Structures are given as C-alpha cells and as structure tokens.
Image (cartoon, rainbow, N blue to C red; front, side, top):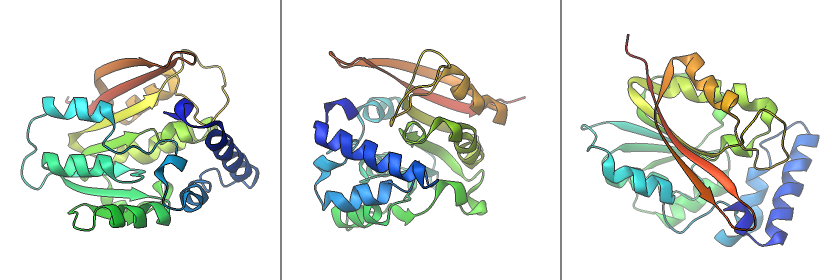
Amino acid sequence: MFEEQPLSVQNRVKSLASEAQTQNQPYAWFEPLYAQASGNADQVPWAKATAHPYLQAWLPGQPQPPAQSKALVIGCGLGNDAEALQAHGYQVTAFDVSPTAIAWCHQRFPNSAVDYQVADLFHLDPSWNQTFELVYECRNIQALPIHLRSQVVGAIAPLVAQTGQLLVITRIRADEQACEGPPWPLSPMELAEFETYGLVETERATFTEGETITVQQVRITYRYAQG
C-alpha cells in the first residue's frame, strides 16, 4: 500500500499530483509516474506482483460468469487484476489513461486475451454504457481530488449493465471533513453517490491495515435495484 512505499516514492507521487492540480489537469500525473518508473514496478505505489488480495479473496465466492459476459477494469495499471478476471471467465476490457501503463501490460502479458486500451475515464466510448456485467474499480477514485468525486461516480455508474454489478475497492474516511492526498479516502456521503444512479450496496467487507499508520479500506459490491 501507499504507506509501505519508500518515502522517496511517496514524495514523488505527491509532487507529481500537486503539479498536475496546479495545471488544472488533476489526473495528468499518472503517465509521468509510469514513465519515470522505467519498468521498475517498485516505483509505482499501487503496483503488485499479483492481483489485489481483496479481489483474490472475492473471486472464489463468485459463480462462473455466463459465456460472453464482459468485465471492465478501470485504471488497470500493470494488469494483474484484469488477468485474474479473465482467468475467472470474463471477457475483459481494461483501460488506463497512461500509455506507458498499457504498453507495460502488453509487455507483461504478450499472449493475453484481455483487451488493453488507453482511455480516459471522463471521455469513454458511449457504447460502453450499460455493457459490462462486472465493472471493477480499485483505488482510482481515491487517487483523484475530492472535488472530482461526483464526476468520477457519474462516469463509472452508467457502465454497469442492468443485470451486472460494480465492485469497488477503496480507502475510506469516517466523516465528510476534507483530507490531504493522494490518496484521498472516500467518505460515507461520497460512496452513497452511487445510489443516486440506482445502484444499491449488496455486500461490504471492511479491512484495517497498517500498524504505525492505520488505513481503513472497504470492498463493496453494488447492483441496480430491481423494482
């Protein structure tokens, strides 16, 4: 997790994110972060050698998806989570705003069936709306400033098929008070914004990590209310 990274990496992330916000391009820092890593995953705070452990723990309890079921991985990074979903039986599309990250995915998984794409969450193909039986959002919302929360939720929720589900893994904070980042943990009110799009929380697991620094995280699934 972020706090487990060397201080030099943390400081570089904060510097890049701060500069991007100053330029009014709040997510422009992802590409230079991946590019400056020069193929060293240790320089990417959220990079892991395997799929996220909370995803790994969740997948065995999920039924095999019907044939041709589509999944979308938002901000796929180095591709481990996308590969895990593909192995579970989904037809996976995975995108990241960073061309370097996507090139890295192709290098790591040259024979993958995952459709890796460079794309911007705020400017996605409209044909993707209500297309995916599973939409997977892991720690991207928390990497963007709080003032973008409503915009991010509004970009993610419409991607979920009416019979599908949304899986969110994120840090949380207990109240609505502002906090410093990145990352910027989500508040209860911010998470509740998914409900304004008709999505209903169906399952939640809460995790506490860290010793010196304690971090609260959640894994939440949402589905559309059937009425």
